[in-house]
Length: 416
Length: 96
Image (cartoon, rainbow over all chains, first blue to last red; front, side):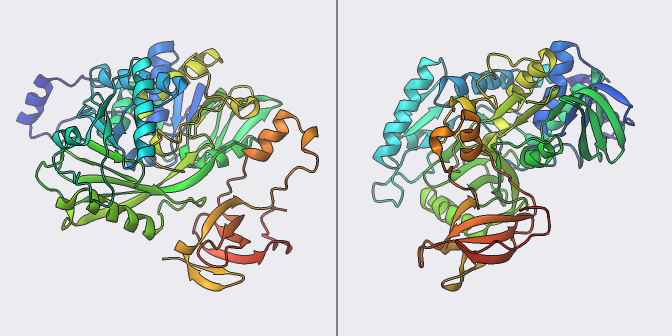
């Protein structure tokens, strides 16, 4: 595979961009691999990439039932930040953010990571206190965080209505300047291309239908393209984690919910940063194409339909209109849903399981995109060493038994 | 908007209801006797079924009473509703 550079761009421009090679192979599955990763989204592909890069394990297959990045990787609002409250979460999300900062160079693929700043608004005294607490906690953990008074909010994002009579008065905000957005498809494609170039087989249109066990040891997977043997299997399937875990006889503390998002018609650059409001469930940024990318809340019920209830969108658009009067006549182009797998404490699972050789990476809930590189990095370590890295050790299944929950409902951004 | 049939009040819009998660999770008879693993199972572990699922709903903006429903979590269609204490309908998918 040839690397991308300014010279390759010029060369291909001269041939009218008709001679770009395929970016990854489409191999037939082999009979056996050292590691099989179930799920070809961002997290699964990142896991395969870091297995190859950090641990020299290249006899790896990524099995994807649909197409790469077609699940939550292609359905989220692409926000990247690390301003979580507890030390455990700070460590994993900040590790991830540091990987984001060098990711385009590392992958030789432009993931369009734009550190334009993420603001989390506070609308009442409770918000103000918990937000300031989070700012101080972040600072103690060496994560950049600032508290902004309302006039500073207005300076940073001039289109917000901060008048005290507004329905959702802005009483301040936290700001993480290193936060921002990235291009979601490019993240999946960049990891796929980089993993493939190190020898990983990426197999699409291959659904796992069973997990094979001999006693307590995993021996492989049944798929729609035949049996594939492997002594180590990583499950990275987000919304369908419970179903795949059930194939191995495991029950999990995970519930799947629909989470919706929508985009507006493209407009000229007007919105300079990412604004999130936990209380009214607006989170909005502007894509490089000019569309506003807007996230809504989760539906409370368990759902696998990749669509949610209309009243969620309605409530969310009402709040958007109150916060940003300038958007009142903007038309929305598309809305969609993804299936987010949530744990009771709003933190993830990156963990070994009671089944030897079976590993689960799940429960990222409403905020998994930002964790993509860190999740893959730590999960690859867990699979390679059969032991979690200190960074992801707190995110074990065991925490639901011993009570060491990592309660991040406050920082997760979306209530669930 | 979806219409949900409250067994006490009849058909009402989805907005009036609150969700209560998986149904028929019995509170432990003898809480003192439970191990940590059993507590974790009771508190946190759920079936999270894709397909027909028995779950609890509450008519929050109406009679405020809890009831049970069978709903398809893939299509979101309500198949049955029944009052607390009534025998759950057989789902035909092995769920007891």
